[in-house]
Image (cartoon, rainbow, N blue to C red; front, top):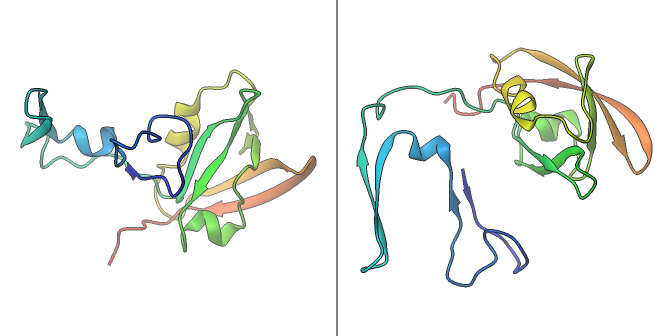
Length: 144
């Protein structure tokens, strides 16, 4: 995932010298060299360059809010998450009866979102202090 902010703000992508983040989804395929003197990054194909890795099949990005609860940070347009009706800021309480709270591991949620297409995930969320149920059906967003 490459993250490029629309507006200046705080966090990892807030500096005028940065254009975004390149995460493990890309970097795990490469050997990374950092040339500080010339201010450049060099990527060469690594041993896992041709390997397939689990990919998100939901189109939603999950983070933690100020209280430490897992919540929806971003929803890709036309993704399964948008089709299901998620909104940014929705707090995730449960997925398929698995309860999440302040100290929940986001990796577990991300792994649930990487299951095979057609997998149904029943979310219990809080939106504007009201509980809501959402059914998310995972899709492979990269099938042509």
